[in-house]
Image (tube, rainbow, N blue to C red; front, side, top):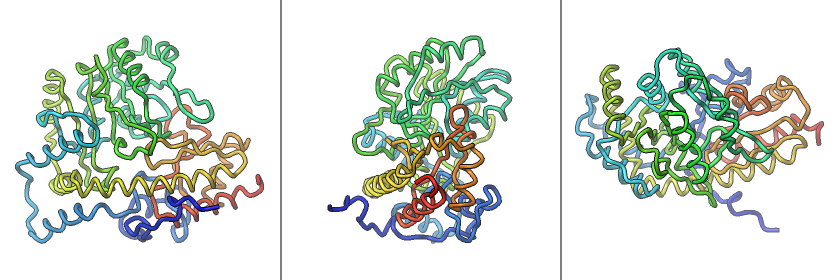
Amino acid sequence: MNADPRLTQIDDRFDQVIDRRGTHCSKWDMMEDIYGVPGDDGLAMWVADMDFRPPQVVIDAVQRQVDHGIFGYFGDDGPYRDAICWWMKTRHGWKVDPSAIFSTHGLVNGAALCVDTWTDPGDGVVLFTPVYHAFARVIKANDRRVVECELPFDGTQYTCDFDAWDKVVEGTGAKLMILCSPHNPNGRVWSREELEGYAAFARRHDLILIADEIHHDVVYPGNTHIPMAHIDGISDRLVMMTATTKTFNIAGSHVGNVIVHDEKLRAQFARKMGAFGISPNSFGLFMATAAYSTEGAEWLDALIDYLDGNRKLFDAGINAIPGLKSVPLQSTFLSWVDFSGTGMSREEFTHRTEQGAHIAANHGPTFGKGGESFLRFNIATPRANIEKAVARMQKAFGDLQ
């Protein structure tokens, strides 16, 4: 039997194992303090950045600034805005007005600014859980309340239940909802019908809809991401959030975009940006401008092909362990593994993963309701690490074989 070429192909841009230990890397240098996973031989599969260098065009853009040697304030962001507009039109068929773009210090900062702009202390903010843990963190830090609408899970895929969610939200004083599209941590690419359902839900409950689409570029074959901006009847309450950071592994640049086409909402957000004195990081803008290019697009296509091989290898290895189920990824590089079939307590399967397999993975409950039996594994790492992770997990849970 011939092996799947996606599992055997070599791409030096992604196969090279780069030791990130001792480089002030949160993902690799903090796993022992946070998870108790030995730093010397542990595998860091938690923080959502990649173990790959970004496209050469991005590295070259940074090198030009280093060679210039003066690191002053950034001016004339026209090329940066043009690059965003070109990328969204070319990759997503979405026409963006350059004047609608606000640059924030990443999208966690963008989400926090949205919460502060359109809600007051005590108001509810709707999340569809399990979902990216930073949302709940900034909501609570802003003295707002998290309203959790748990996503139904059929054992294979997450779906929507708007009738049930109507009852959850009723009477909560919710003013805003944050939709992760594609979804983190379960990797769902929402269908047009589902997105229309979310839009109708927002209208029904008079909610501002924040669409976090940071993962929209990493979508696997057979799936198509639809920008929420393409859904009818939502433009007067829609705020889009996008970034280069996840796509091109430049999260440390802390640059993201809040895109607001509605003039009333745009004016409100502009006032908040001004009130907090938000101005961009020049290195982030240079990097993002370089990334949104034909060279960046070629690198991304190769990345998706490589990650597709990683996902197949990881899923096959994890699903071979009785009681474990890796939710099929449609998007993202974050595998969501269900341990409920083992019959183990959360403490036991987590201990086996961390102390048996020496793997640091995100704990499911941090993502909210529905995450109790899960761990999230970052598969954006050289294939040798995926092979090692699978072997370690199979050994750690070997008594289930």
